[in-house]
Length: 210
Image (cartoon, rainbow, N blue to C red; front, side, top):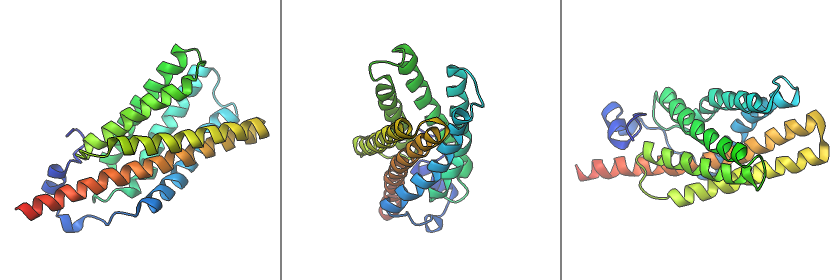
């Protein structure tokens, strides 16, 4: 997928491999992702907590817009490619949009019942992982990326739901947003680490062969 200009060949055309930033360890990448998206998610859920948007469909759309606008910017610090923030933001926005569409399709299609949120997130996160892998030219590890992303996203989402059930009201909604963001961000940090590790390996392999 060359749309975002992040494949090994495209990166080599624009950047000397020696200028690539070192990849953060996976644990640090996941921690950074958790903290960054935790903030973004809390802001997004504040639309619900403070009742700033009325109507279920409109509220979900507004929350998605906050994620679309801020998440790529927040997670862009994990990119090892110089000057790639706009490309990374475009990649995240595109992949998150497909995730949101898949989630909403299951949620509204099943009327919010039969674990619609779980099935919707599984379908959406698989699409997101696939798009990231294709964008970075990562040919292996898709199942591992998706599994980690889905596990941490699900853990964060349902931990937040428990917090909301226990605390309730405005504080509970903000806690749900924070927990969802922590889990989602940790999973995305792992996904970005795996994809960029393969990107770097492919670039080094090409240079060695040449």
